Length: 236
Figure (cartoon, rainbow, N blue to C red):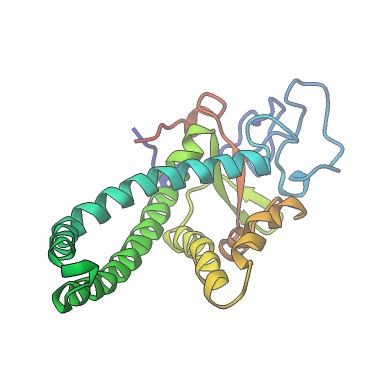
């Protein structure tokens, strides 16, 4: 069963990295007990370990999680779209077949125009549904299915540390809306804004994308079994 992070105290026992832990709830020692970190790696200023559970997720694992999420919702969205428009598509196909000499009849033309209008509306509704799905999954479990499969989780940044407590609904919605908004605005107003959002983590000091900065979040490695007992949870 998923855990309710908003009801749990901050973890203050042994750190993620196997060290003594600190007031932020993350380990300050080496993941293998080899000694303290130098503080020169990405995530050090947030009190996160350099590698292993609790460390900042790599750009490639984040990309992999996003691809998985897009495939899942792409399949679901396609099924919904075809199911919603199937009868209309059949009607148009029938009218096209009846059109003489390959010339579309006025009825077929009207039906195609009507399909275009309803299709655009349905696509907009599916986008809103995807934003809501991502926001609710991030708020409820701290991760989407793609992040769950690759062992990632989003955390809230409070000043100079990453708080393992549950994201608020506003943070989750802001994060999802920031990502999909960048894609939408990028395609309509600012060219390549969606791409800039996605690759921003390549040079950012905390590996944040632009939508992370909007919501004040980072993404960490959080494999099942690699968390403190108080934060143990599963997807679903």
